[in-house]
Amino acid sequence: VLNNAAAFVEALRSGSVRALARGISMVEENAPGAVALLKEAFPHTGKATVIGVTGSPGAGKSSLVDRMVGSFRREGRRVGVVAVDPTSAYSGGAILGDRIRMQEHALDEGVFIRSMATRGCLGGLSRASADAVDLMDTAGYDPIIIETVGVGQDEIEIVRASDVVCVVLVPGMGDDIQAIKAGILEIADLFVVNKSDKPGADRLISDLDYMLSLASGPKSFRPDILKTVAVRDEGVKELCLGIQEFIRDAGDARREHRRKDRAETRFRTILSEKLSALVMERVFQGQELEQLLDRIADRTTDPYTAVGQVLARVEVK
Amino acid sequence: VLNNAAAFVEALRSGSVRALARGISMVEENAPGAVALLKEAFPHTGKATVIGVTGSPGAGKSSLVDRMVGSFRREGRRVGVVAVDPTSAYSGGAILGDRIRMQEHALDEGVFIRSMATRGCLGGLSRASADAVDLMDTAGYDPIIIETVGVGQDEIEIVRASDVVCVVLVPGMGDDIQAIKAGILEIADLFVVNKSDKPGADRLISDLDYMLSLASGPKSFRPDILKTVAVRDEGVKELCLGIQEFIRDAGDARREHRRKDRAETRFRTILSEKLSALVMERVFQGQELEQLLDRIADRTTDPYTAVGQVLARVEVK
Image (cartoon, rainbow over all chains, first blue to last red; front, side, top):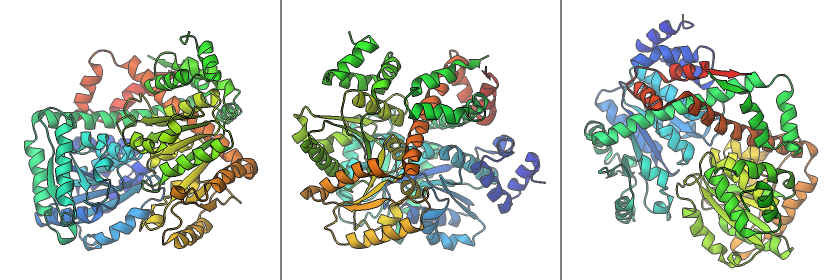
């Protein structure tokens, strides 16, 4: 029955964990039927609060997310987690290791955890993780947490699919403030100083405060800075409340900015992936692509001329 | 005279540092004339050995590259460096700080150093950094070192423009081996264990050795592992020799693989960037894009249907 998109969406909505797992595999693999499923699911999305959690490796994001899951569970909410590692080619490899900590939630039917990595994911990981969020949303999970392993440009693209972006920092990494790159400052809605019982926490907060006073974000918006000690479950409830408060109260301009940014990122990501695939498929027959690449490698054709020849064959009606 | 691509290339070839700096700014900004310049320069490229250097932040890549520049200079070679930070939105920001260490080379006319970051770079950074390499190659710099700040997926794309990829690791980062993600194993031609006088270096090397014995790369190829202590200039000469040896001796299959990978990455990167820009420009007039994004944000149109409508207007002759 799951070959029919409408039946698939019904299975998701009735809470079938198997349907959800299979649906996410389909979007990862760009399987036939994945787009039909996403289109059918779309009207049922937009209900969940999507929380992005990013920050340097070693900042304790996994423990923090683990505790956040616990906190939301105590409110009786069903929680989805998409743990994404753009640098890992092994699906579920490194992250799955971290996720062992989440075993306490493994038997909890109110928690759905999925790891995603580059390998096993056809097309962009930011496209696929946003698709996975849509399916979890359809299945009634709320909130849905998108956790990234690192904090590079890919990770920024990935957490852009969120309603609220939390950036996790820890004191004593030497270059904490230097590590907060401008892209992060622009995307952060909340800063979390984890391991805030460690020396240097106050200095990190005052450095961050100073940096935020210099940064030019959307007018009249300045992210809050919250303190947690995830391993002792300290400050986690306050963080979860802070997130909900942000969603409810954030100035209209900021919320509108995040909403449009989320839509635009989604659209451009899908367009870029599908467009290249379409054109490559229609332009190159048999060995033509191989031969062209050989000419570029031999430097008998330059790549710009080669691209120009392809573009010359593209018409827009 | 630099408005004429042929004259521009002549200026590059005659060693004009000003022309080179301006040319790189043009490719960064996607300025009019950039593509014409790159096409004109292309027949003069392919002479330089392009060395990619990547690895975790804190691995001492900057110091190592600094020492490599010194070593190549002692052989009388003119060295180009492209330092790329995909996570920094500020052009030259974080990296420029590191580059202060390179001041000893700042007055050396035989060294050309350029920092590139996301901000100020229109289009993809991997496209722009490969373009910059082509211009340095045209200007006679050899070798050209592409150094990345981090080690994510973007960085892998960036160093793919190299003839040889060096991955720098350091002992005692706790999760060293776990940090070596599969994408890195596949791209590495040489591993460098920097700070190899630190405790844990031998263990790191044996862990790495074990990992390489498990990994399935192109058949019959296994990267060498070299030891350096960059701050004391130890092992750097051997590394530079090892790089040249790799270029000369690497099994044909490996060299062929790298050569084709380099051409394919280049072609696909440029195609994807130009194709999206072309189609977006021709499809959307006035406020149409804004309106479409609003409909996606409101969830009255799903992004796949929106992309499908755009693709339906694309024809390939």
